[in-house]
Length: 116
Ligand code: AMP
Ligand code: ZN
Image (tube, rainbow, N blue to C red; front, side, top):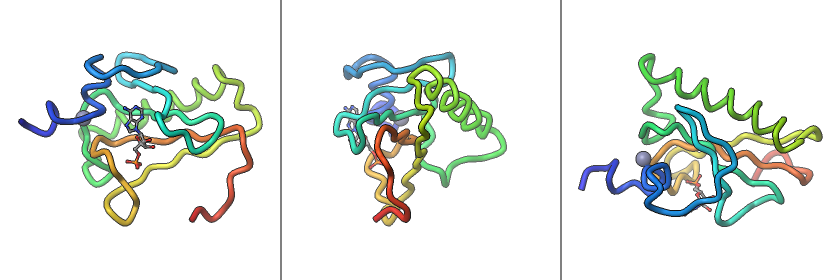
């Protein structure tokens, strides 16, 4: 199996694994985190497989811009007027467990800084 067919989030985009959709466009999919760390916790991903922040290039960085356009759209859609946090975990020390780049959108509680 190659990394795309074996990838949990590629399977979610393909509808092979169920998810609770929060937002979708041609480039981006957002869904509810199965183990939420805040009262509102979305996972936002480019539909195209990029393994991690380390794999962002001049060729694919437009997809990351699309992710952040989606952040602004979701914040309005979900009335997150009190604020929110966007997190990307990269690599082992960053705590990345799913190797398809994703951005956590956390909201509806006071988020501590710095994180643990
Ligand atoms: P990370 O630790 O940054 O790689 O984040 C992976 C996130 O994916 C975690 O917050 C998990 O709770 C979440 N997750 C894992 N499997 C699923 C799933 N099937 N549906 C929704 N979220 C998931
Ligand atoms: Zn993938």
